[in-house]
Length: 147
Image (tube, rainbow, N blue to C red; front, top):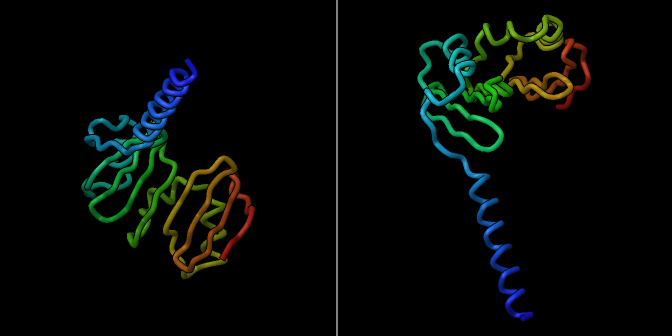
C-alpha cells in the first residue's frame, strides 16, 4: 500500500515536471499568428525590415528582424522591449517616448544613441550606446542612472 502511494506520488511529480518544462518552451509561429496590433507596430516602425522568425512562450512573443533588431510583445500585442542589436532605433519608435526622456538624453548624452528600450511597471528603462542604463517614470521623470 505504501509502495503504491509512493509510486503514484513519483509519477505525479514526473508528469508535473514534464508539463512545466513543456510550458516554458519557445514555440515558433508564423508572423501572421502575431496579434494584429503587433503586426501593425512592425509595419509602422520597421517597414521593409523582414521578419527572420517569431517565437511565443507563456509570457510574450519574440520577433527577430532581418536587420538584427529584436522586438518583444506581450500576449495582448503591446510592445514591451526593443533591442537594436547594433541597429539604430527608428525615429518613429523614439517618438513614442515622452518628450522629457528624449530631451534628457540629448542634453546629458548628446553623442549616445538609444540601443534598447524596455517598458517596465514604473515606466521605461533605456540603454544607451555609451553603456548607461537610465530609468524613467512613465511621465519622463528621471529615476536612476546605472553605468
